[in-house]
Amino acid sequence: MIVADRKPIEEILNSIKEYDKIMLAGCGGCVTICFSGGAKAVELLASQIKMARKKQGRAIEIIECTPERQCEYEFIDQLKDDLKSVDAVLSIACGVGVQAMSERHPDTITIPGLNTKFMGYPIEHALWDERCAGCGDCVLEWTGGVCPIARCAKKLLNGPCGGSANGKCEVDKDVDCAWQLIYDRLKKLGRLDNLKQVRQPKDWRTSTNAGQRKTKFEEAML
Amino acid sequence: MKSGSRLEKVLTAGEFAVTAELGPPQNADPEAIKKKAQYCLGNVEGANITDNQTAIVRMSSIAAAAIALSCGVEPVVQMVCRDRNRIAMQSDILGAAALGVKNLLCLSGDHQKFGNHPQAANVFDIDSVQLIAMVKRMRDDKQFLSGDEIKEHEPRLFIGAVENPFADPFEYRVLRLGKKVEAGADFIQTQCVFDVEKFARWMDMVVAEGLHEKVYIMAGLTPVRSHKALEYMKTEVAGMSIPDELIKRMQAVEDKEAKKEEGIKICLEMIEQVRKIKGVAGIHLMPIGWESITPVILERAGLLPRPEV
Ligand code: SF4
Ligand code: SF4
Image (cartoon, rainbow over all chains, first blue to last red; front, top):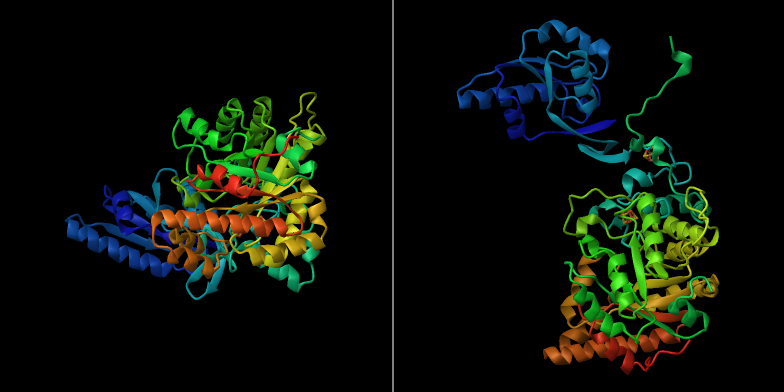
């Protein structure tokens, strides 16, 4: 899932300061699960904004909504009529949702209310960890299912670096060293041989380095 | 000869080799290099010119190496993977070789978090093992990483790498050294040894794998002037092993000058100890901020004058 944090309230208030009526749009997908952008988050943020604006002496009207997924035209097209009456959309979907909204409703400005961070999953209640950087050429097959691209601060393919100590990464003592994990997993699987081979430089063309990527599923093309 | 560097000649002649660190300044002053070069001149096989060490902006290692060369000191240019992609690295490798550099030490590099520009984007297009293989390919196969041919004047470099016997996972460290050797490392400089016992255990494993016959291993040593430096390394630098007895020993000395002397003595004892360990081909001195001590230590260790090769 995509994990995002809410922007600081001051930043949000500042970005909508010139508007008197906005739509606050959440998303029923990933950000609902990570609590930053679901229906509850919409409700909470709306009341925070209204309160702050009232204090400032410039009340604001807010239409609240939480489409099933803000990243699909099908769900955001339904907002068309409501959009006519607002000055702007404050979106608390991920960056993908914000862009879908902007693209589908180009006459209305859409402002992000979240900072989209990574692809990952909850490792315990209310705690998410990054797992994949979408590099486009997955190596998990030989790393024992631990991603060295998203989880090693140096993206090493022949790790670990000299800073790995007590299972933790030199960059952050609260983060596991990906390469210690890789070593431990492969050892357990009896596959340490995977680490003997010198891994060749990665071809980053499949990653973000070639500009915007596209993907096609031929069989499903209409 | 792969490179014809002095370091290569001394090592292949079977002599105990010595290198020392020479950190470039955080400014554009060539005199800073020239001054430090004097401590190295005639005393070491090569001076390691660090590459924006701990991610703090300093004079370019290749530029500083050119200045060292002009003083008659053979540089070991360090190159980290943090700041440049494969295009810039290959370009700099050609440039360094054209300036007369004959030794190149390949490292991943300290993360930018530790330096003075933590906001910077890092590169890590390739890692240190891949960098070693790339330099070897340029030298031996006369090819760029892309496979394009280097038609003439390929860079002739003696390829160095580092290894940290004190980082985790300990059992894997020797395997990883093997990868660096397979990739093409000619010599290895280790992280600072304070824990000689652990270093010896690691060397046992290196020898058991026969790696000491494929690569020259130089033990990294850092003379210290206070127990505080040791305490700092113990708590703040990941992947260091500092025995408490050493800290206590430095602590027990009151006077500042006496502390320096104690630091020198410890370093001399360690030189003695590592020289006796099978497979150790030399030492690499890293007197952080205390470069002037290099000739003193080498003299007292009986490592001067350096052999003729
Ligand atoms: S290797 Fe690439 S695709 Fe696979 S998990 Fe890591 S970033 Fe994602
Ligand atoms: S400590 Fe481990 S995770 Fe951190 S940069 Fe080094 S190898 Fe990567």
